[in-house]
Amino acid sequence: MIRIEGRKNIYSNNHSNTRNRLAFFLLVGLCGSVFLGCGANRDTSLPVPEGPAVLTIAVMGDVPYGLTGEEREREKAMLRTQIADLNANDSVEFVVHVGDIKKGQPPCVPEVYDAVVEILKTSNKPLFIIPGDNEWNDCADPTEAWKLWDTRFMRFEENWPNNLGAERQEERVENFAFVHQNIVFLGINLVGGRVHDPAEWQDRIQDNNQWIRDQFLKYRDEVQGAVLFGHANPGKKLRTAFQYSNEAFRPFVELLDKESESIFPKPILFIHGDGHRWIEDNPFPNAGNRIKRVQVTQGGLEAPLIVEIVAYPVNPFRLVRTL
Image (cartoon, rainbow, N blue to C red; front, side, top):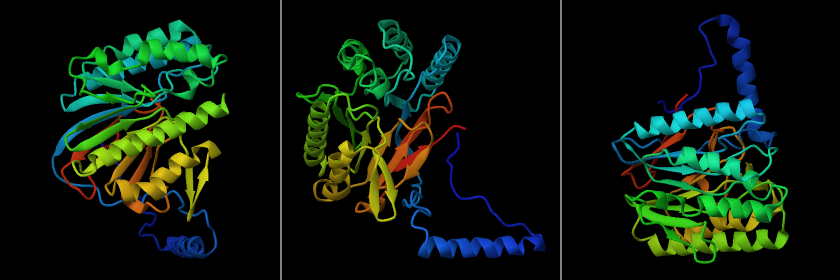
């Protein structure tokens, strides 16, 4: 396992690189004065905390994929291996799957969901899961797809006796929260994809926001930070503004960006899937480096992300990727 840090040295000892260096510094100047997009999503977080981890968790998403039967069987086998590797890692206490248990095109049929249930249940650690769009709102019949998800994955961590006593939101049972090792962990139903029902989307995001507010206010004086799990990528930072991937996400983003400082002035790690490629940044303009966003790599391309919690109140989150 390695922590991806620093940047490659672009220089060599060869004097012929002088022009490259000059071009580099000119580019830096242009980025600062002309090109508004330069470095917009760079990671400006605080230094990686040192010291022993008091808690280690694993996060995966967008797995198993595969369009053809052969591809899907390969990804299912990979997921089995990843779960087995986590089982052998005694430091990992629980696992979170941030949604998308299938690729978008294959039908949303019971056997697809059942196969993933069987694999995830091989975990010897409590496993939490939240919905992804591919197994719900992007299906041909979202209502039937939700029934398939609900009957198989709701309260999934209760398949293990040591399930950390997670609370569930009364209005939206798929949303969970619990405190462990001085951190509050929250999962919400935040999907991307098709807006299958505008009223449902509005109600769900309002419920999500209320759940986040309630937990932040409840635990702000007891914990040193929060980890928030969702599925969708709500957008990206463009210099001093936020560009939404879907306007429906605006209330959620504004809660984190503008409201969270007053109700939870602690470090927040927001982890989601959906985009398949690694992102680690601080996209919320008003929150600065207090809120780090991570988009986990699609599970077929990279092992689960390891998150270590360190007793360091300024920045308690250490990210470890296996490449």
